Length: 320
Image (cartoon, one colour):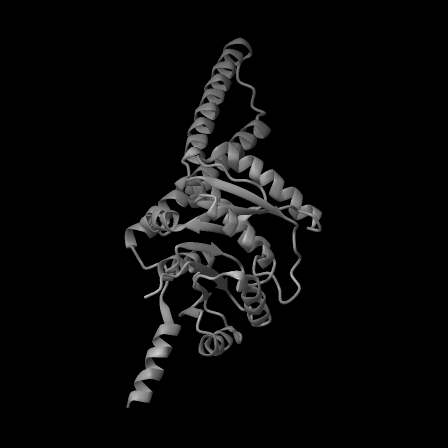
C-alpha cells in the first residue's frame, strides 16, 4: 500500500457555502504533488448541508474523507479527530472558510522538507476590526506573562505538523484541550511563515464574543496555576491590610474612644472582601470543574458516520 505523504485536516461547522470552493482550491494548489495526499473534513455536527456535500465529494473524489460528529463538540475535538484519522507523513490543519489561504501550503511543505517539525502560518491584523485587534494584542501580552508556554499574536491552528509532532499530541489525552498551547508545549523545531489577513467571503464566523472570551479563559487556565497563586497573594495582602486597619483603629479607640459613625468603612470593607472571596471562589471553581470533567473520562467526541463506513456499506450492497 502506498504511504500517504500529506493529510489535510479541515474542521467544518455549517460551512455549506465554502466546502466545495475550498476543496477545489485545495486540489488546484496540491496539483504539483507527486505523492499521495488526502483531505479529511471533520463535520462538527453541522445543521446545514455540509454533511451531504461531504458525502458527495467523497464519492467522486477518492482523496476526500470525512468524519461526522453526532453533535457539535467544538473545534478542539475536531482537530483531535483529524489527528486520529490522518495517515499522512505530515499533517496540515486548515479552516474551511477560506480565511487560511491554501496558496501558503507549498510554503508549509517547503519548511517541512527543510527538516522542521512545525511550520506555522502567522497572519497580520490588517483589515481586522480595530477593537478586536486591540483586545487580541492585549490578551497575548497578558497570557504570555502568566502561562508556561509562548503564544504569538496572529498564530492559530493553520500549520503543518510532522508525524512525530502529531504522535506527541495524541499522547496527551486531556479533556480540556487548548491546541495553541499544546502546539507550543510539545516544542520541536519550528519555522514561521507570514501572510496577510483574509476576510471571510461566505457565511458567518462561528466565533461569537462569548465564545472568544471562554476560549481566552481556557488559554489562561489550561497551562498554569498562577490564577490560584494570584488568589493566594490577594488574600494574603487583604489580610495584612485588614490587620493593619484593626491595629490602627484599636489605637484610635484607646486615644479618642469609640466613634459610632462608621457605616462607610464597614460597607466598603464588606463589599471589598466579598468581591475578593467571590472572585477567588470562581477561580478555584474553574480548576475544580476541570478536574471534575477529567475524572469522568468521557470521550472527546462521538462519531455519527465516516466516509469509510459509507464506502463499506455501498460495497456490501453491491456484493449482496
